Each structure stands twice: as C-alpha cells, then as structure tokens.
Length: 232
Image (tube, rainbow, N blue to C red):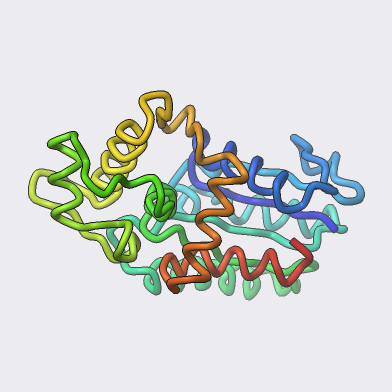
C-alpha cells in the first residue's frame, strides 16, 4: 500500500502528516521522492500554498497527478488544503473541479484513489479540538477573552469565527491555540515550523476521541474515516 500527500505549506503540514501517518500506519516507510516509492511507502510534498496549488502553469496538482499516473503503484493520493475564510463545500468543490478538469483534458483515468481533505479552516482549528488542553478557568487575560468569545472545549472549533481585530479566521485560530497550549504548560510551545505536541500520538488520539464523542471537527473525521477504511 502506497500513499502520497500533496499539502499546502512547507513547514507545518509535512511534519504533522508524517508523524500522524507514523502513528496510524507504522508499516509504511517514508520516502522523499516519488521514484523511491516501491512497496508500503508514503511521500509528502508541498504545493507552495493556495491558490498556487491550482494556478501555477503547470499547477503543482497537475504535476503530481501526472507523475503519480506515470509512476504507477500508488494506491491513495491525498490532496490537503485549508478552507481558510471560505466555507468547507466551496473549497472541496474547487479541488474536485480541478481533478475533473485534469481528467477530462488528459482523458486518462487515475490509477489511484484521490481523497480531498479540506482542513476547515486550518490545521490549527483541528488542534483546538483537544478538550483537555483548555483550562476551565484561564489565568491569562488574553486566553480568557478568547474563551469567552468562543469556548472550543465545548463548541466545535470548525464553527468558530474571529473577533474584531483579526483579518482572517486562521490567524485567530493560531493565536488561540498558542495561548491555550502555553497556559496548559509553558513548555508546550507551538509555531508553524515547530508544531510541538500536536505531532504526538496522544494528541491525535485526543482529537479522534473528540470527533467520535461529539461529532465535532467533521473535516478531520473525514480523514480519520478514510484511514480507518484502509487499515489505519
């Protein structure tokens, strides 16, 4: 079984997906190049972000679809993008449209299953779903204000907007996560380059439990359901 992931960013996503795949599919070997994929391998490649993943000529999506078809032996191709300030379905359909366009232009059926994973609104949104990371009575005034605005331990983080003063939801979700982890334990630092505790198996397990018990984080649950269906 061979996987390939095409992700947006070059810093956070490769680290997260690499560790999460290690936890879920320990039998797979990580490789850096598609040509190194043989049996039970996976690779993770960055697209340079949105909308570059679709708009470059040729687009990273087109490049990897072509390479994977030519290589053969790939079972699953995961295309992972943030929804950011768009709604989930809008971003999902955008990726789906690009896949159909490529298929129509080349008139070549994919030799692998494609899976559209929309991180709604971003990876940090998912990470806010660790229920035990948000203290009941925050001491930080900033975190207390965030919790009063929206309590991510009780409500679905994917439905959280942002207060005045933030240009994007993603930037607010990132700040909320940093404050939440720092108050839980000053050693639990998070940056885009060093995502810290979110790479660990117990963190992934906590997010899985949140999905299963509450129905929250449905975009993450989609990914976990796919992994379960293929032996994760």
